[in-house]
Each structure stands twice: as structure tokens, then as C-alpha cells.
Length: 221
Image (cartoon, rainbow, N blue to C red; front, side, top):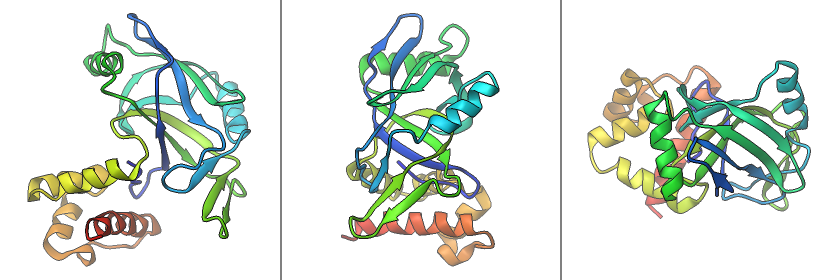
């Protein structure tokens, strides 16, 4: 699911199949693949991660490994991350001996019940271009901040199903809004007064409301 909150980077989800996973929590796979148009009409091209990975190497590290794009829920370190001819290859280690959430993620990966990976990134000036004829946004350079294990891959069915679940009752809808980045006060204001119930003083918040509106509009057909 690709909803960004008011201050967050953009997210790009992709179908994720772990190439290998060990009993010690180590795993390998691809965080992104090149030249494949996802369900949001975004496509990442070879070389898009090169500059960002170089900057991370200067700092002696890699982007964060997170759970569901939650910055306060890291799962462990990435130990290798590089571009190859296929995409963004990565290796990491879940801290299964020290973190119950990492153990949970590891169990789901092994069972195949967790198959989503999503990158968190920002686009530097000149890093993307919109092809209006094809309706595709081409990403040629991104600043990579994190790669998350997520429940849903990038497909419209998963996205719409999430909204349907959110609309089953007020508590579910409030949680949906909170997960999307609204504060509790803002979420309750939306529920009580609609989108006009909260301030759109910054452009990011306006963009968030636009995305929520688009998601709910899908349910109306």
C-alpha cells in the first residue's frame, strides 16, 4: 500500500520473493526490479539507486530495514545492498534472538505469509520524469532511506481491500487514517467533518488527503 504521510518519503511497493532465508534470520532478495511498471504507473530504471548507495557507503552503512514503514520499528541491519542487471539486490539479518517483532517477521517470511517489500525514498531534482503519452513516471534517481517488509505488494486489489476493511466501522476507519499519517485529532476531525475538518496548511497534508480520497473513490466504482 503506497500512502505517504505529511512528512514521509514516497513509498514504492513491489512483489517480493525471498531468494533464501536462513534459520539465523539472514535472508536475501530484491528490493526493487528495473524496467517494470507497477500498478501506480511508476518504473525504476537501472542506475536509479547508484548515487544514493554511494552516499550510504560513505557513511559506512545501508538504508534501514523497517516493519511496515514504521521508523520506530526496525527489524535488523542490511548487510549488503547493490544494483545488478535485475534490480536492487539486498541481504539482511533479522534480529530474531533479540527482537520479538523480528522473530515474527522471520516466521512469516518462512511460511510465505509475508511477501511484500516496499522502498521508502525521496526524489532529488531531476530524478524523475513524467511520460504523459504513456502515462508512466520514470524514476532515474532516488534517495533511498529504507526498505520495509510489508503485508501488501503493489497491486490495486490489495489497496482497495485495505480501504474496504477500513470502512467496516469507525474504529477501523480511524486506524486507517492514523496509519496513513494523520494525528488522532486530525483523524477524528476527518471522521466528523470530512476532509475539510483538518487544516491543509502544508502541501504534504493536501497530498495525503488527495490519496485517501482517490482510494475511497475506487470503492464507488
